[in-house]
Image (cartoon, rainbow, N blue to C red; front, side, top):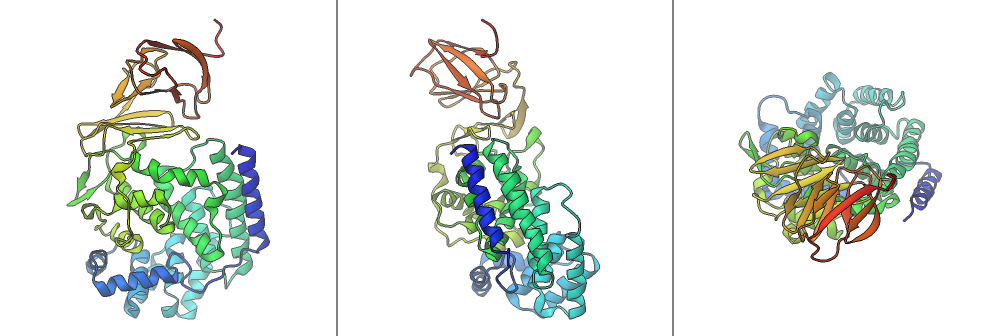
Length: 439
């Protein structure tokens, strides 16, 4: 669909939403714990499921938790134990400074909040909305939605103003047009806060923001799966799948935990989509359950082992998003597979348990992954009969004249990637020249 049509559809959607007045419809709890999900979590406790037992163990352990308010408020809402709720409230009043966690405690712990405590927490949430967003980032906008939804009955005008800002000004006029124009503005690490935001807007306002740019969300699960390095990572007695990171940054458990939390939330948001069923198949391996004090609350909140999934290893091990300039390919789905990824103009490989960033200025040799040839910036190379050929490191959206037996003109995507359309079995040389150059 042309960019102008996508932007027009987005504007129509948010205009219609604005006409509804952004009225928050449901009673507490409003955030993340829709009645159906809360009932499921309470049944998980009754079943003494593995996820519940891991979460309960984390709660019972001495010392503070990484996200004290979130974890203890969730435990209270599932068990109904007033003492647990009071611990969450006391933490929020004494130490809480993150609007997201304050909103969750305020929303989930209403039955054990004294009026003076509720007023104090609401005032802090309202103050967090007094000023415009500082960076318009996904985590910040998520936190502003949480704060607005939490205090909607106390400050309806403030809540409506903030929700209008997020849905119309930020999502409708910034995020959707940017994605439609090929700007890669959703970092891998922001997927979890993005789905918290989507969930809060849908549950509270009845709006699915994905509908304004459906292609992005249809491609998202495959991008997510293929952007993992093949080999698992172990730390502190836990095993993780490690997602791609810019600069081939050293592996970090928190990054892996947040990535899995995003996938759990993605599946929970839309269990019927075929794309997320492949993701569910990826999530069912017990070895990678989040068990740490940081991860166990997320695993319990979002995980559903009873949800059927599809075998992810039946997916083609290649993902290309020409609209955003991403390419990920692996030689197979085994842990020892060779992996090559290009995103944001950065090329990486993963082999022998290590990720490496490669130059794309034409100094590196072509990389062969099965029948796929990835060529880093070379403008003259041998195709060698590859089934598919991708040249990376080119000028973003640049136009190139390609000579491979015949001549053609091809445009690179926003990430500087061209997939060459070569004659089947072609083994000659391929030459590229910028269409702006003179003959």
